[in-house]
Image (cartoon, rainbow, N blue to C red; front, side, top):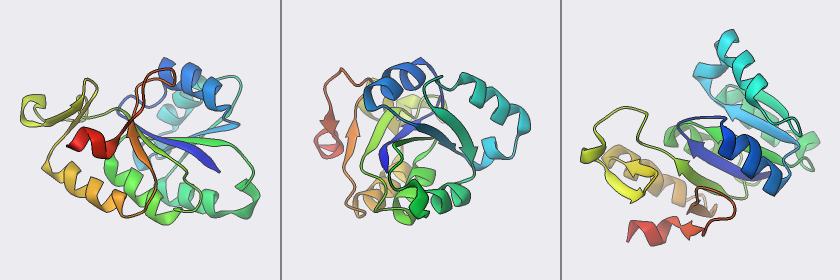
Length: 163
């Protein structure tokens, strides 16, 4: 069961490795990224950055969906990190029953484009027109979506920040 799928430009860092992993007690922290999964160096670095309390895996989007739909993972508390909304949408559509929550953490400042040309959803989340289209598709999955930087901070629903 995926307690949290986090969209975060920075992949594994202190907020994920310490705060979220501890708060939600992930047994597995999965980085779902075709780019990272194709790079032995990046995979090794991400595994080293993972929290000691969780097994850290790096999988392609396709493999992540297969893993999440495997009945053997049904009782495993999993956290997923993706770096972009398209990957989050693919997982949300491919493993809808397993994903319990989608969280936007840090997004839109590092993945290219001029931030001044993007819509600010929070101090840490910026989206462009293409992202807004993906978000509309993501909302159709029925999975709750929120913006929350850290687990002890206030959670705001995506619908509230889009107003």
